Image (cartoon, rainbow over all chains, first blue to last red; front, side, top):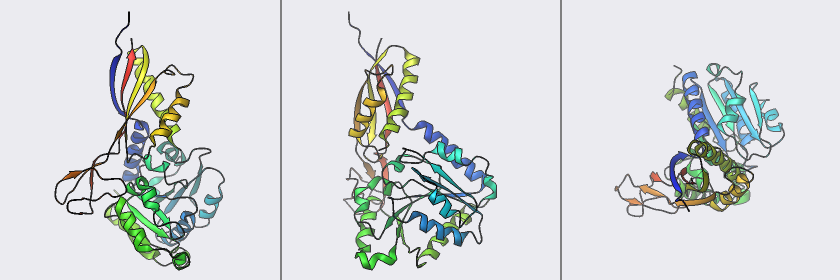
Length: 224
Length: 113
């Protein structure tokens, strides 16, 4: 005798556990009054250099901290540690992205209400981080002038799930014949209306505009 | 490749559900949106590794790929654009209201009693 298999409806998000934890983190950040911004990009697009310069600037008037994700080494945390005393490395081993659980664990012992900004540098990867909510208020995707202008078309999901795009290494744009209009057009193909900023961490060009954008989050969400 | 992490999350949920209902899980149905960041072939491969040696080792993964469905706030029409060109083909409004395509959902299980 054969029995008919039963169909059991589940209808649950596969990353439910991460989503729930990310929601809790977002609420914790909101209550503590800290603005949390995450950064995603491919390896070598200049996340750490950009953050180093940004933190040195913002650190003059704001209380900042950073979490840095990498598969191995704490080199990036050591670099950012020169700009800010509150930096922690998250070493993921073989995992190609940060998740909400890693963020929660890395925050252990930090008093969030003593911070204005928390920056999260994700593992250099344009694919995997797109599926994981970290509880951040803003996700910034970086694309450097030394990469192809068609990166947004090759990695549409990460661009679509980000809030702001930052084109870095603009000081090299001439040397690489980077087509800024094509890059902007491609970004807007996969994420219409997205704000795009151009910076050079090396020369400092465009950094004031980025600083202004982030400082605007402090006005929008004052400490409660 | 984060599909193994996704497969392991699925496995955890499936084992939980299976324990509640009893029986042997024969098939697992999931919905994966084109804008979920998950590759279906990689997920199928990862599932075969994840299920090995577990109580659901015989469960087949059945993936429903969910296309992008977008509503244009400009003209109100709905359309299913490619993920490389998300704008309204009617009025070229560069805004979007994504109705579906981000799914990463465990939909149902087929269980033998």
